[in-house]
Image (cartoon, rainbow, N blue to C red; front, side, top):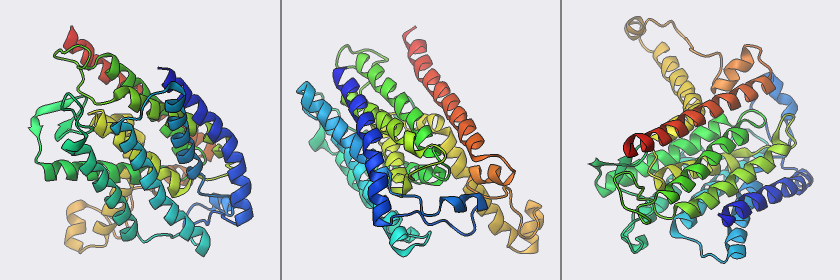
Length: 370
């Protein structure tokens, strides 16, 4: 438990103090955020704001975790190292995207195909290692399982190795892109992520106290290294907290793809290794809703450009759109909501989603034990 406190506290301090120096460094280097021309006009004032701040979050998490392990004299576990690999790997993909944006001074960085290839490589390597028998502990538990899971593995839904790997790829790339889509307003992605990593800190602590390694039973958890995953979750919570000081409106630094891809991938990693893949849909309900808004908008717009027969079937006119602009937070901007209002209300939505998710998690255990 001491490692959890050290990890969270040290990451918070590193992020809080380190972001201040990152702002100065990126400003001197001219790493200012380019703004898309077709976005809300209120965002034009952000042009030139230092970006790639997510690098501080990633660095603070990694340093905070390893410092906590060093202070407590504990060895890192396979699960935690895999999660850090996922965090850093996707952070590097995001960094390349951000660097191309600032070097070209254009809102487009890596091509979508190149970005997806990078995410896929990281996700597949993570999946292969997490499912590998080489990383089994003395109980035969691996960091990830080949089952579909909600709060624990569904024993009836065992997947072939290829499908299990495909599921991991889908969760990792899906949630890393979801957080990336949400990173459009000051403090939105960092603040919302803070709630989810805080939730996974609690989930991992609970899974450790009810681990099958301590006492076998019908409702114990077969999760490898839950307490060490809690250290990483606490470090991520602290890092997001410290970064939010500088990222809150008006933001003095922007997270960029460096941070959003890394944080989204970390959420997916926690879901996979804690056997809560479907529960993440509840905990990260805001990110799911934002992603769905984009998918709906694109799908309806493409249908609106189809033949007259297709449009008549779906009862949509030419050029029809469901939202004024996507992702979802831009729709509310176009309705006249202030950015701060949107962010705070989206934080509240995330808090409610996390409360519901934790409630479901605990209720399942109570119902099973009772």
